[in-house]
Every structure is written in structure tokens, then in C-alpha cells.
Length: 159
Image (tube, rainbow, N blue to C red; front, side, top):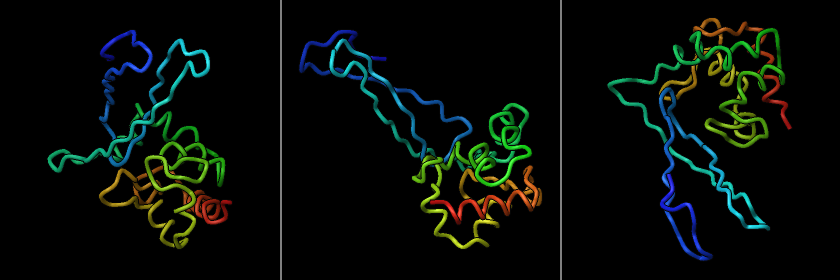
């Protein structure tokens, strides 16, 4: 919602942005495009950042969310049969980003600095207090030990 459809040069207005945070926890980022008749810059993109804190009364149902029938098409199905970079891009980049920096979760630049055993454990079992579920079969997720190993190798060797 905007306070006015028309603004004179140098006039200000207000923009109300609403973000659906259901099923989300942690730092989230959303983009908002502002369209104008400015011939040099007709579109201005704003980055909105928020920290979503899960309610202790209703903890973030991460495993249920990511692996549910409604969400699996985006969070699981794309990665089936893939390993390494292809698996990361299909299942991990949605939260972790694909260009190195953080998205809503630690990016490749930060993750590659971690020990391989730590990464393996977090991928398999998830990370308590965060939206990161256990992606390994032992942690309730869809990934085999071989697929987890391929992700750790990709992350550690990412450049």
C-alpha cells in the first residue's frame, strides 16, 4: 500500500510492505519494485530485511514444513537423483544462496570455512534453534549418506 499514486519531484510518501512470515524463521529478505515515469530510472528495487523469531509456544515445524507434501516440490523433489553442485542448487540454494553470500541462512563463503564433519552433522541432523532441518535420512530427511557427502565436498571446495 502506498500513501499516494503520484508524487511530485522531491515529494515523499510512505510505502507499507507486508510479508507473509508463516513457515519462516531467521533472517529473511524480500525485494520490492517501485515503478515510476522517471526516464533514467523507471524501476527502483528495495531490499526489505526482517528477523523472524519463532514463537516458543508454536515452534517452527521445520521438518514438517520442508518435507510436507505441499512444500516438497520446491524443497525436495528438484534435488532427487542429483549430487554435489546440482543437489546444492536444487535443495540448498533456496535458503543458503548460490553466489557465496548469505541469503536467509549461511552462504557458501561462511560454510566452506567450517569443518567437514560439522557440515555433515548439520546436513544430516539439522541445527537446533534454526529453520535448518535434518536433511539426512537419519535426521528425518530425504538424503542418503552419499548425497550428504557430495554436498559437503561441494561446499568445502566451492570457489
